[in-house]
Image (cartoon, rainbow, N blue to C red):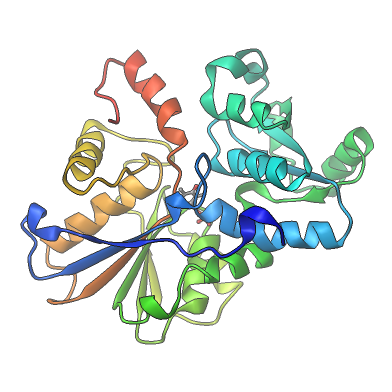
Length: 307
Ligand SMILES: *Cc1c(COP(=O)(O)O)cnc(C)c1O
């Protein structure tokens, strides 16, 4: 497939743990955030085989769903623009329609040519129902449907490609978890001896059953101990940690997913969770486009911002 989906292999960087006084471990991070200059990481992996399927089916239009700051919406808009698909985003929250210019994610999507269609929270809840989808087909014509968050079997297949020969030597593979699709790909592609650790960005570890839909392997565990109260929730400790991490490593983190994962990894390291001399591998899934929107909210609350 053309242009953006060729030859992805992201740089793997070693994190200098002595800067954090954690000398007995090795931590490496794969910079999936570098896949694309604006939109990054796992959302593009999840789109790869879906967009290939859409092309094969002769579809010219992609339709998907998301909230006001959705990395998935931004990724679909950007990928659609680069590969010549029309894109339609069904956005949760009618009140946002008049505020597109104030919202960095929605402005970006619009600038990429995405048609934004705003629906009430009530209507949005019906997004998996046939009647709702059929109504959208009547309105917009035929389209290739991408689920919210982008998770399906083809998405999982794309995420398997995050791992490669170079990653075989790691004992632990850490990843942030939303729907669990990315983690499912990692579990599928992992060695039996590797332990996959998911850091849930939301309350609950219900994603285990989602992962079980795609693989029978059980060498994984999910924790929500570092979700900071729920999806999109943050506090000053998290912001301070993210800024400190960036200062010491030069690696920017996002507040919704990768910041929480890295906070969790560091906490587990300090508390002796990992066996000594363990080789730990973390997936930077991207999400940096969400920083601008979060900083707007932080400024309004007079809180420190993400540097
Ligand atoms: C969507 C997203 C995730 C979660 O991916 P799932 O496959 O839904 O678990 C993790 N990190 C970032 C940056 C994301 O945008």
